[in-house]
Amino acid sequence: MLERFFKSQVATVSDSTYCHRITDALTAAGIKCYCKTKDVNQRSVFDATRMRAQIGTFGIKPQYITEIFVDKENAELASHIIRTL
View 1 (spheres, rainbow, N blue to C red):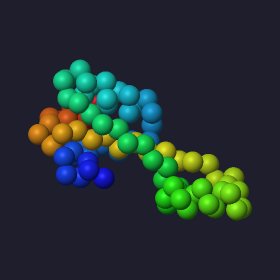
View 2: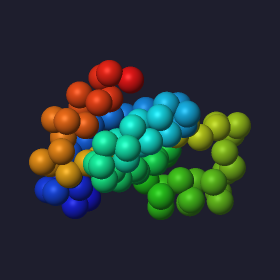
View 3: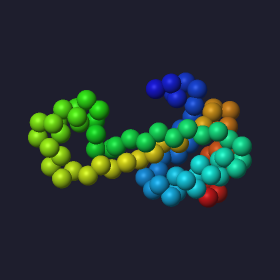
View 4: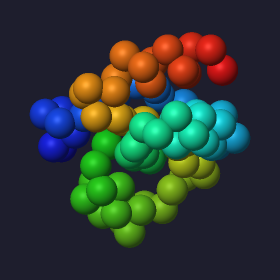
């Protein structure tokens, strides 16, 4: 939640290998990055836990996305690096 104030989101990816390529490129450029992974099918942690306990998953597989954040002062350079990958 605090990333809204201090960080800028530069990418959202669903492929883990592409995520690693981005984080490796940003780290090589000296830019610190922060990754946040979440399940798209899950509304909130409390709803999902309660629902699975009551009725099961119904065969719904989790679908993960990873959001990549950097400091606001490095956002423009990070976006340029990601576009060139």
